[in-house]
Every structure is written in structure tokens, then in C-alpha cells.
Length: 402
Image 1 (cartoon, rainbow, N blue to C red):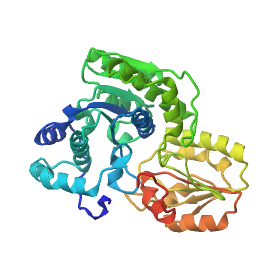
Image 2: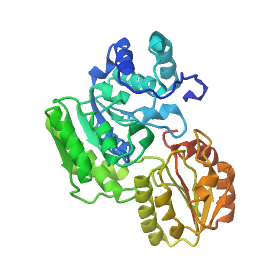
Image 3: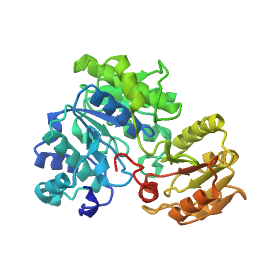
């Protein structure tokens, strides 16, 4: 069962920790009943959370994973050992706890965060891996008293909320460091971002360790050089758990789990002949990673024609990086997401020259492109998590966590 038929209270995005803290208190502070690890950053948060969870699951631990946004159903956001929370659990939480917290008026994300903490406590998980939703300082995940903080690469995104410079964005994320008892780890960052993270760590009398790539990981499902640093961060967190929580997970076990980790929507191959790839990349940094990965992938496979279907949300500063896509694709189709405020397809087309065409309907854009393509071609569908429902209707069972 999935929560498509359950009415989930919705509220606009709200910032601050007070509502989450109060809501957790109503639920008798379930976040205190397990060891939690918070993953922050701009790109790679979900991937690091997936890798870390898989390593711990394979080692025999019961692991809660909280991630966002979802691709198809909200149940995907809350998982234990890679199994989604059931509708019955969501309904029980709403009936027994949300009604007590209505006066707080939590946002949707705050509600889901507290629900995850309650569910993980109820099911007695050994570890919880929590992906930050937005920023860090005012994100409800930060209210959950996390023992380890792991920072993925930090770059420009959500500038209208977090700030219009890299330093401002980094500061918002860094301020999740709020206790001398926390262990802080990060992938290697640009110098200015490093300084922001170090300053915040010093303010709280703790230290932050920057993880350097030490070995080449092999992946069965993940793709791209950027996932090497994501895997290295997960490994560094496991090393800390080995030291403080006596998990005793070997490098061989880590490498095997990294190899087998799946994370939908990240260079995900939906079908072959023609090859169809889906990726949620939607900001300058992730789009750069994608196009670099695709160039390598195409060189290895030598596709005859390459099609790309683009659909983005509004307020994405991606014009410069998208221009680089022209030389890699024969056909560019500009479309629109069916959920959230979509960037107008006309505005996407303006970025390109004559090569781009407009097809506003995403499902029609996908189906018509599949009809045109032959078995030796490649189709890329790119730009948003909110493409997920459309893909789920077209490619049945394409998402494991559906």
C-alpha cells in the first residue's frame, strides 16, 4: 500500500526549528532512541545516504533512512532496510499524533521528519541516516540531535532561499554544526567553503575532517566520477562508526555494498534498445556532473543519435551549463514538469539555437521520442524529481522504492 489515498496535511515551506522541536516533544522525543547521522550539502546527499544505509544493512543492522523529495509516493521518504513505510503506519501517526500538534501548524516537511523519527523509534532501528531537506541551520532534520554530520559537495542551488553567494549558502548548511559532541566529516570543498565550515566547527569547539579520495570504487548501478567522492564520504562515516559504535565493518564489505547500491533517478537506465536514461540533475553542479558522465558513457557505447528531453522547476540558474549540452545531443526537446511550478518550455528553448523544439506535454514528449528512436540511439530525460510520476506511468516498475 502507498499513501496516494491518504490525505496528508500540507502547509507552505516554513523555516525554523521550534515547530519540529515542539512536535517531537509531543511524540515523546523519539529522536533520542537511536543513533542518527545527518547528511548535508547541495548534490549527492541522497546518494551518500543510500550508500551508507546499504553498507549498514549488509552488515546486519536495522537502518532507517529518511530522504527527500520522493519520485512517486511519499512513502519512499521513510524506509527501514530499504522498505517503504506502509500506509497503515502513516495513518496511525496522523490519527494519534498530528491531531495533537495541529496548533503548531507544522509544514509538510516538518510533519514527515517527525513521522520518520517516530517510526524509526517504534521499529527500534540501530541507526538512522537522515538527508537534510534544505540548508541546515533551519532545516527540521537539524532538530534531531544528530551525532555525525556528513557534508557532500556544496554549490549554488535554492539561492532565492539560502543566499545568492556560495559563502552564504555554505554558512546556512554549516550552521547545522551546533554541538561539541558532533563528529563532522566532509568531501573536499572549494577553499572558501572549507573556511566557512571550519569557522562554524571552531565556534562549537569541534573539528571537521575533509575526506580525500583514496581508492577507486566499482559500481553496478551508480555512474559517474562524482560518485567516487560520495562513496569515500560514506566510507569515512563508517570508519567513525567502527571507532565509536564498534560496528567493525571491513573495507571489503564496504566495497561490496558500494558496488550493489541502487539510487533511483541518478543516471538510471530505464530500458535498453534504445537506451533511456533518467537523471534528476537540476542545478549547475549536478548538470555539469551529468554531462561529463554522459560524454564518457556515450564514448563507450557509440550511440547513433542522442535525444534529450528537458523539464525543470522555476528559478534554476542553469543557462550557462545547459549551453554545453548542445554539442552532445542531436535533438533537444523542451518540456515541462507536471508537478510544482515548471520552467516554461519556451524559456528552456531560448537557451539553445535551432536544434531545440517545444513539446509541453511531458508524457507526449517521451512517447513521441521513443517512437522516433531506433535501437542504437539514446534518450536522456533530465531535470527534476517531479518527472518521476510520469515515468512511473510509462515505464512500469522502473523504481524499486515505488
